[in-house]
Length: 386
Ligand SMILES: Cc1cc2nc3c(=O)[nH]c(=O)nc-3n(C[C@H](O)[C@H](O)[C@H](O)COP(=O)(O)OP(=O)(O)OC[C@H]3O[C@@H](n4cnc5c(N)ncnc54)[C@H](O)[C@@H]3O)c2cc1C
Image 1: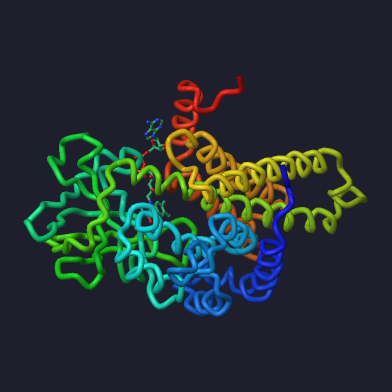
Image 2 (image 1 turned 90 degrees about the vertical axis):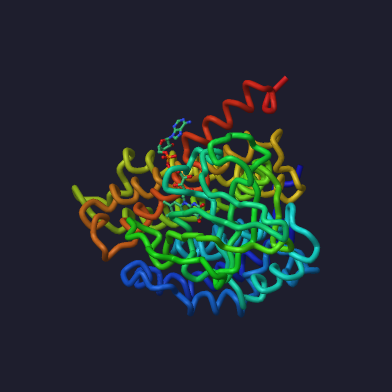
C-alpha cells in the first residue's frame, strides 16, 4: 500500500495549485456575483491542458484519469466550486461514451472536449424523475434508421454552453420500469427540435447555468446511439462519485483554511479566538473529517481508474461522494460560524462556500440515495469485513 501520489500527480497538483491561487482565487467572487459564464477561466484551463485529463491520449486527452481530475478539482474548489464543475463537465457527459460508445463515437466526440473546442452536458434528470431514474418519461422511438426523441430534461449543468448532449431515454413504454429499455443517445445541440427554453435562478454554483432542455421529435441517427441500459446510467454515475467528492473535499479545505487564518487574527476577551479550546476542537474535528474524506475520495478515484465502477464497488464509490459532500456542508457551515457576522457577509468567501456546498449533497444522487446504495451493498455483502 502506497499513500504517496506519483511524481506526475504531484507535479499536476503543484501546477494547478499555482493556477488556482493566481487566476481563480481573484475571480471567484466576481463569477458568483455576475453569474456570467467564466470563458476566461475556460481558456486558462485549455492553455494548461486541463480539459482532457480524464480522456485517454488516443482521443486527444492526457490520460491523467479520474485521479488526475479529482486532484485538479480539489485544488480549484479551494476557491471556486463552479470552476470545479467546469472541469467535472469534461467527464460527466464523456463517461457514457468512454464506457459504452463505439470507436467512431470516441473518435468523433472526445477530442473536441479534450482540446476545448467543444463542450457537452449530461441529460438524465426530468421534472418528474430525479432520484427515481427509472421513472423517466423521455422516449426514443426506433424509426428504422435511428431514433426519434421526445421529452424534457431539467437542471442540466452547462446545458446552454453544450455543443452536444448525452440524453437518456426509454426505448419502450415510458410507464415500464424495465431496466433494459433505457438507452443513451448523443444529440447535437443544433439538431432540429432541440430547444433550451429556460435557465434556473439558483442558490449557488453561479456562472454555469442549469438549463431545461426540450426534445421535440429530434432525429438521432443510428451512429449516435450508445444504448447501454440502466446499467450504463449507474456505471456512468458510479465512476463520477470521486469527482463530485473532490468538489466537496476542496471546498471543505478552502473553507477551513480561510476560517483558521481568520480566528488566528480575531481578538476577543483579551486573546485571539484561536486560543479558545472550544474553537480549536472544532478545527481539529473538521480537519480530521477532511482527511477521512480525502482518503475515501482518493481510494474511489483509484478504483474508478482500475475500471472498478460496477455494482460490487458501489458502496466504496457512494461513500466518498456521500461523505465528502456532507463534510463540505459541515466545514463551510463551521467557517461561517467561526467568522461570526463577518462570515455572513460577502466580504468573505465563506457564505459563498456554504451556498455552493448545498448543491453537492443533491447532485448526481442525493445523500439519501447514496446511503441507500451503501446500505444495499452492506446488506448484500458487496462490502463486508469477514
Ligand atoms: C445545481 C444542480 C445541477 C444539476 N445538474 C444536473 C445535470 O447536469 N444533469 C442532470 O441530469 N441532473 C442534474 N441535476 C439534477 C440532480 O441530479 C437531481 O436534483 C438529483 O438527482 C435529485 O433529484 P430531485 O431533485 O428530483 O430530487 P427528488 O428525487 O425529488 O428527491 C427529493 C428528496 O427526497 C429524497 N429521496 C428521494 N428518494 C428517496 C429514497 N428512495 N429514500 C430516501 N430519500 C429519498 C432525496 O434525497 C431528496 O432529499 C442538477 C441539480 C442541481 C441542483
